[in-house]
Image (cartoon, rainbow, N blue to C red; front, side, top):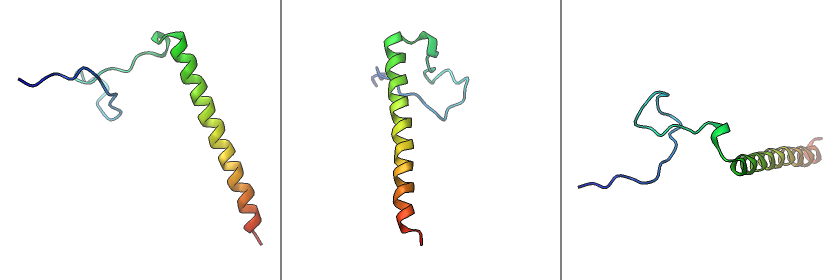
Length: 65
């Protein structure tokens, strides 16, 4: 008899009302600590991305001529 999985992975490409797929929890339903952690990680990723773009622009300016 096949065993049912105990963990779930969010499916980004499923139909919105598909009952077989685990639903994404509402942001407000998450614990405060989880929301703070996710927010801090997202801010860090965005700032790192922006800084990376700036570094590429500085490097690219050296090669223009």
